[in-house]
Image (cartoon, rainbow, N blue to C red; front, side):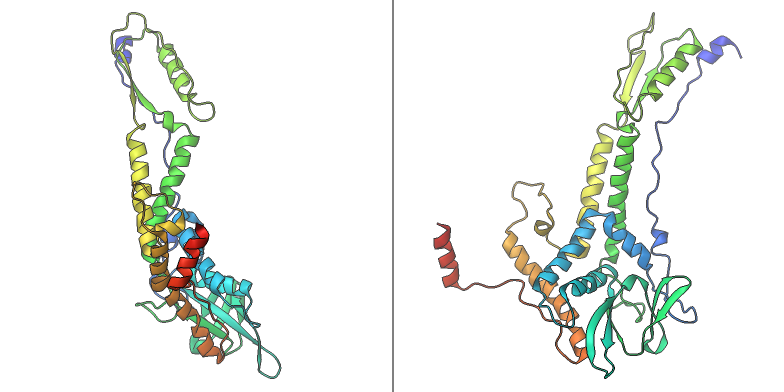
Length: 340
């Protein structure tokens, strides 16, 4: 090939490729509760649900605020401490399934209630329960010693599934956008552009030097200045075309905002309680009113679910104080006077 033909060849190279960070098949891989000979496998991978909890800010925040509210309202009992109830509530809110172990004395009287790790709990036939932390480790609980609180599932009746399941795709998308943006900054792609060059370069080494200079602008030490000298060049012979400054920014915020709204809709937690900054001047409305509606529609039904343990045990162990304490008109007036 002649020298003139070589000069007319167009060259292109990439500034970095995004990598996938989450795969839904790791979590939603089981379509039924499979019987393995001793116990049934959960329909949803428990390890995947645990890994998804810290994957997204709003997902974990919604779970923890419900747990914290329930814990603040829980009245401790001699059989169940605050710490143990906190574990029990977090298990249920994360996995939609929570098990409580009854520990009896030699006379058959219950002396303690201890939450069992839902991530490793498996259910067998005839209400048998197993603790399976590893493939070659298992512990079978005594018959009648496990109470299972489960969120109903329309597909099976062995395990509970979390009600936020429909929002997981949005949570993973939100995390993917965040991790991609981190990788985008770490490898210097936010300084990316297309260098379009039509001026004739006499030496092939000049192209190689230019390529090396551009590549050295990536990673640590990016935003370096670049000088190019093209004798006899024409106007617009060298053009710098940004590929990410505006479009990638807009897409990032759109993905983050839409996926955030989907996650919050799945959890049904008011944005005022999750530290979300309103994008409009009017804000999200009265936080006190939103809190009262949240307490009536979400917290009180959750409290009723946890009190199901009392029916199984035959005594009142789990009780709550009201989350919202209503004030009468006189109390409100007194408060206004004190504020002034």
